[in-house]
Length: 168
Image (cartoon, rainbow, N blue to C red; front, top):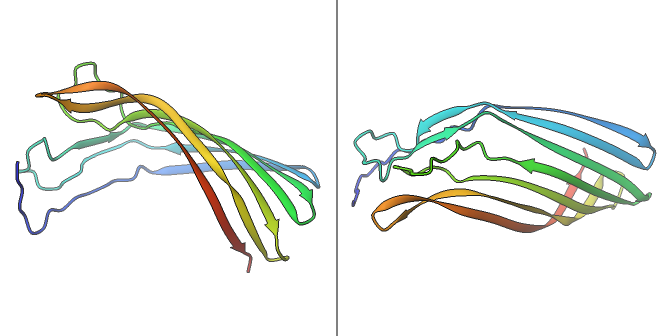
């Protein structure tokens, strides 16, 4: 279907989120932390124009969910920190039915880890080098032939990070 409109309005609702975390310095060299993220539910249509066909206009749903993050920072030298973490990145998408009749968001529950070195270049600045991995398996809906089908899907990625910080 060809759609030609000068102003095709779209919408995205980000679920409300609350984070709570604690950290504890076990020694002058070791800091450990844990954080919980709680997301609320929401639902909406991605395009505001109600006259669009459902093959273009999607109903988006987010179920409530909780993710958890664990972190550690170890002072290797007075000028060098090693930071590492483990985390979940669960999908807030609803479960996909076995015989879908419309498009759904991908439902892929993920987990990951990170590892970084922070070089303290002064009392107020640092340079960070490292990366993080995230991956998971789940399901997706694809339009195959003349109908929607639920398929298995997996995602894995590694990101290299270069960062700087300056404390005022």
